[in-house]
Length: 230
Image (cartoon, rainbow, N blue to C red; front, top):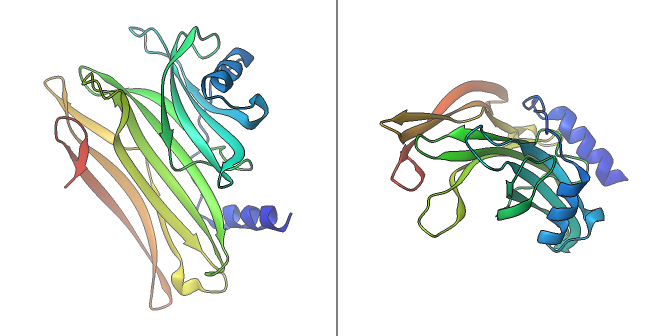
């Protein structure tokens, strides 16, 4: 109970994150199918967000979390691509596992949508997680943005863009406080191919016992298979 209260206090002290995007309609068929596909107990699986397919596509996608304590007590998040809409999927086509994953009392800001990368489309997703750092006596939150797609090279579904930003807040050791909250990345496209991606981040850091605020734009170039930082 004390741990849950601590996390609740953490989420009140961390700068406000983006407003929760609608998860879409995820019927019981999707949850049951995901549990069978991932060999998980349905009671341990939760659908965090879903995305309907674009008009020209046969299937949507879903973000799901398994929290069964098997992986050192840490939950595991997966992106699932579907044949059919999330409300009535025919089957699961592929899956991709992520390292950042919200716990049972988190996940309200999870987000999934379909975006264009020119001649192919990709999944844009957001995941958040938070934990209490006993040694530093503060709360740490991670905000994770990723784009995932199948490049058609036989490697299957994979992340082509990833950025994790970290926020730390401590009342006991305020000199350690820092914050980085990043907005959704944007992609530039030319001649049907992605050229680059930008992500804008609001940053706060302690400087001589004062909070210094800034905003930075981080740029990534497309190398033919993924976005790489400049």
